[in-house]
Amino acid sequence: MRGLSGGHGSGGTRPPAPGSGTAAGRAAVAGLAAAGLLGLFTAGCSTGGTGTRDEGAAPTDQGVPSGQSTPAASAPSPFRRVDVIALLKGDPKVGDQVKRDLKPCGPDAYPVDTSYGNLTGTGVADVVVNVLTCGDAVGVGTYVYRMRGKQYENVFSLEEPAVYSAIDRGDLVVTKQVYAKGDPIAYPSGEDVITYRWSSDRFTEHYVVHNEYSKAVEGGDISGPAPTAPSED
Image (cartoon, rainbow, N blue to C red; front, side):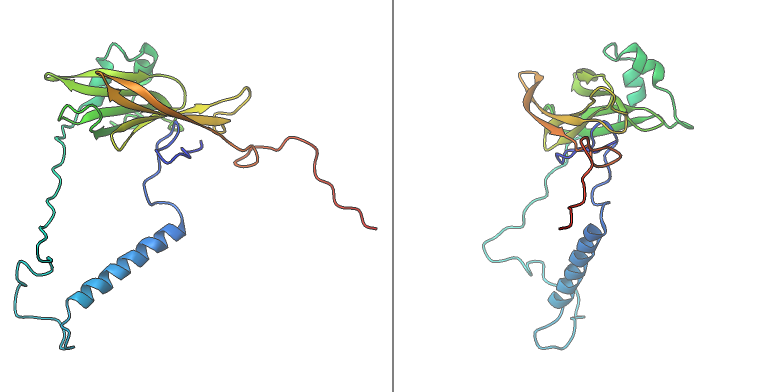
C-alpha cells in the first residue's frame, strides 16, 4: 500500500515513523548531532585555551543577551488516555460490520491506532481513532471524538476501505485510497487527501488534493507497445 505523498501521513495504512527512512536522512541526523556536540565543547572552553572550567556552576544569566528574556515553555494540552475499544463498541455511529470485525490480532492487541491532539479547542485533547485490518493494516474506519461535558461524543466518522486520518497542526487530514476497476488492494490508482477544520461546531472541508500514481512502479505495468531498438544504417 502506498503512503500519503502529501506529507500528512499514510493513505489507508499506518504511517511510518518520522525520520525512519533513508540512509541519507540518518546521516543528516548524525551530522547535526556531531555539530551540536562540537558546539557544546567549544562553548565550554575558555578563550585562553586553559581547558574547561571546573570552578562550579556557571552564573544563571550566562549566555542570555542583555535585554532579552528566556522564552517560556509552551504548556502542553491536557491529555487523558481513553479506552478506545469500549468507546468504539458503545458508539451507535460505528457500523455493525466494523464492530463485528473489531477483534484482537493477538493477545490484547487490537488493530487500532489512536492520536490525541487539539482539533476542536475544548481544552481537552480530542481523540482520533483509526480501525485497521489485522493482516495488512488497511484502514476500514476513522473517527474523531470530542469531549462534551464529562463524556466523549463522535463528531466525525468515515467507514470505507483504505481510509486513514491524522492530526496535522490543528487540522484533521483524511486520506482515502482511490481504486480503479481491477486495481489490487496493494496498488490503488491514486489517493484523495482532504483537510478538515473545526468551524461552527463541526468539521468543514477546507481543501482537497488528488494524487494519481504511476503504473510504472511498485508492481504496475506500462500500457502501449514495447520500445524498439534504433535501426543501424
